[in-house]
Length: 455
Image (cartoon, rainbow, N blue to C red; front, side, top):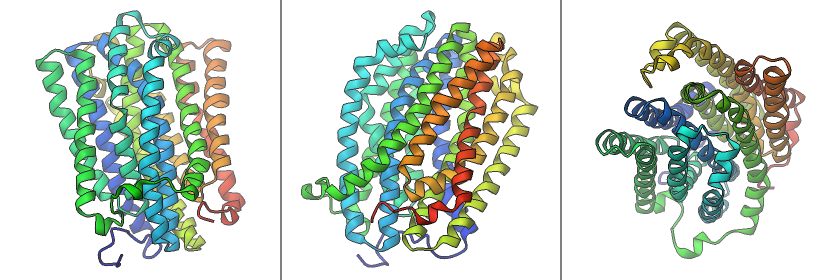
């Protein structure tokens, strides 16, 4: 595979700040597009169905996100593994890791689909889904679960390309999904009046179109891509799968633990009725604007960290952390000002329900806490994930999800008697625990001597 024809992008040379921004902006745009097409779901359902529809999509979407985070955990493991092989110059290792990623994540998607479909009613019950929204939440969740093969497929293709240093094509593929979703959302909900089912079907079909196009693109450029798509190349490589599982399981547990804790908090939130449930649903979509942005910084940073660690360039890793911190905090400040200055206007994009709009200014303050929390987490998560420190990823997931989020929410909401505000703020401040642990690990310098996945 010659360097001219290879799709691999070397992230171990050049100006770190320029590279991180150039490499992360497609991440940000791609993830922002994902937020946009999720927001489109909420806007369409809110405007044409109302607060009951918002609550249904919010509750059903929470369940879908739980399993999606598992997919993201293993996709991130694939990305880091491939990036470390790239950094070390092992092209055959890259090829084996790609085949293993495709096969393993496909099998995982099938398994998660079966588990999710079996447990839908049980999970909605645990979530205390409002009775008025139950039917809509159920059909939304089941429809999305049925499309998991496409959801996992998109995440896997994106992770493989990003591990190779290509963040632009994942942007193109999510753009295709977003546009498809927008058109189908309006058609299915506004024209056909399929409500929550129409919203879910639009999402699944948008992802399916994106995955099919992305695979066709990669197949037609298989010589440059470095993967021939022959059946034997999809064989699961023992070395690669061991590394993927060693990192992927803790990452999946980390993401799942955080999501489970949020579901736990939301189960209390939902007891306050459909209006508060709708407010939280809209707030979660707005929160994702910052979350996805900082996740993009973290993911781009992780690929850069992984490649530079593979190449033994520690100083560049430190520069990645500094740049990621500055960028994240800048975005947090800008978004905070916008959201605090126009809370009702922003919420009115989703719904005209006066009862929901009344809560908007109060929830915007909660979002500001989330924004700065995410900004502080991103650079240190990049180091932890780039190194492939599975143990610390697991600890962070448990601390953030189980100990901090649930513990603080119950303390403020129940013990101290602040009710809904306790659950909102308790969930928001939990991420500072993750940021503190990540900073401690980075400051200790232990990441410099951690054993890489490829060794």
